[in-house]
Image 1: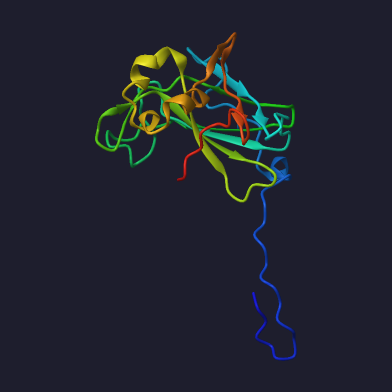
Image 2: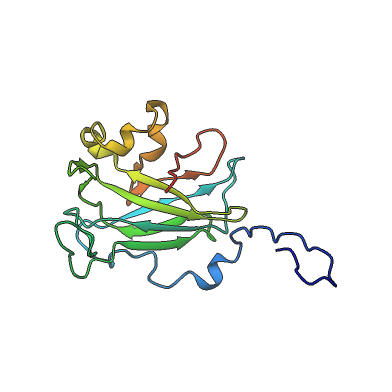
Length: 191
């Protein structure tokens, strides 16, 4: 902002501020990683790392997830089929331990803007040092490959980059690493 006081020299514009590395101070809460409680039938862990351009884990990032329930419904008034009471659908995990972990269930398909079903997916936002805005991506599940073939979002991504949006199976659920830039960069969406 430039000063309007004639006694002061013009001040430079204040630069934009980057996110972090303070995310774990006030944005993490005890049950944040638990979209569903321990013992929920069909529950899985979605785990991964946030990697910088050199492939080094970012240990001061925050990963947020938002998803439908196993039937593809939300507890939100904008769900065209009506809200499902009690479904949180939101998770949050920091990466201080070298990666993130969210305890959840695989969501069901959700209707797209034209009413056609989208493949089951989890929406992901990543906040990290040096970023002016969050990075937004999606996690798709490998067992729904048939639904991937008609998902309008995946079809908008070049075929040679779609693999960056698909999790891999792990012993206790799924693994999905987020590569912020460089070789194998995860596809991010401008929302």
